[in-house]
Amino acid sequence: MKKLNKIISAGLAVALAGTLCGCSVEFGTRKEPAKSAVVAHPTSADYPEEMDIKYEDFSKEYKLLLVNNNILDDQAEGYAAACEQQRYTIIQTLINERILHQKAKEFGVYELSEEDKQSIETEYQDTIDQLETRLGEYAAAQTSDTELSDEEKKELGAKELDKRLEQAGMEREYFRTMMESSLIITNLEDYVIAGVERSKAEEKLKELQNTAEELYKSNKAMYENSGYGQIPYTDMWLPSGARKIKHVLLSFDSETQTEIRSLRSEGKDDEADKLRDESAEKLKEKREEIEKKYDDGTSIDDLISEYNTDPGVSTYPDGYTVIPDGTTFVEEFQTAAFVPEKIGDRTFCVTDYGVHIMVYAADAKISDSSLESIADEIYTDLQAEEFSTKMSEWSDEYAYEIDYDALRLTDPNAPSDTAEDESSNAE
Image (tube, rainbow, N blue to C red; front, top):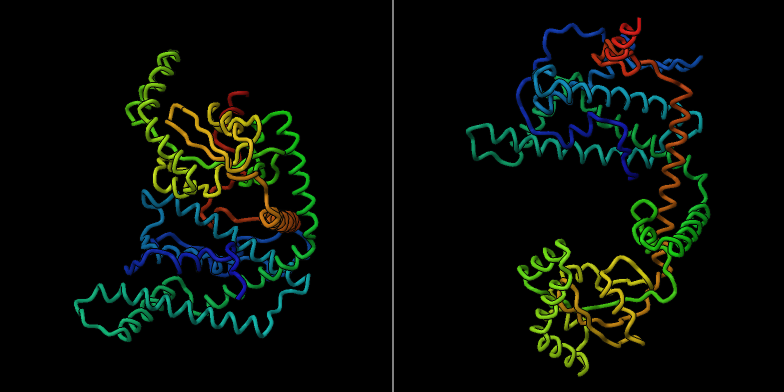
């Protein structure tokens, strides 16, 4: 089955993931609007009547949320602000649903296929089964009978589910309706993003690679620390000469490292260097032992497993990528990385962390498969941007008006008290 669209039902999300309360909820004495009262409607001309949102539509979603979270009074201290935010979320969700359904009808993707309906039915039955099981376990824990069978627990769960839905003014059919709505929106999304060509992602990737190359030439630090979203530039483009370096770190003890840092911060670099050299000399025998094992044929990976104290190595099993004139690594490590002349050669350096036995493991390159994955991610982003753009256009097209008073919401467009005070002072 296609993925359920996440924006569609706040109530469904709560029903599936909310806390397992069981108390009867009282909704207070505040007089509610009539169920048929329209609490949000488009301001555009000649819109279909079904785009109106009635209080009953809103109330079901909101009450299910309160029921499932055992909120007896949504104005109680500690709940009021969060509940108001949920009311905002629910009305906006319902508005989005109406707009998207209308667009699905206009584009001819509103009607579900028989295959879609069957998938929804399967999903619906699975959802009901899960809810009855979870609620049954909860209900059984509230009884003194510890010998209930799974079937008896399931019966308790079914009753609990129906009770909660009744409190919210809903029936089980609600879940099927929400699933249908979600799939309609998914179909609309598929229709819209179908117009985004994959070649656009490849063009975007090429632009990013060009940007990475220019940054490397002009500002290596920015090149190493920037990128597209969560994708570093170093994953898209590498300069000629970039290397993969594997190393074994023989760390100084924490007390020595702390003392070296302290001396550096006080501007006593000579003393820090002296302490570092003395500490490295104590590790000379161990360093030479590792170097001899490597020269005798032991792989660097085996030596890393046996001797290394750098926790970061496990995150980079292929080695660290070191670029010419890079700024990511400390100066000593950066310089030493380019001492070996050919792949397989070794060297060592001393830093404030300890002694590093380093091997030029390979030339650093970005594989075609990695670039393909990045292009896929960019493509997904472009599709999301396209749908978001359309959603923004459609929202402007219908420009819903909300009855904030009826929903007990603060009108975000109303003048603030601060603005009124300033206006009074100006007079």
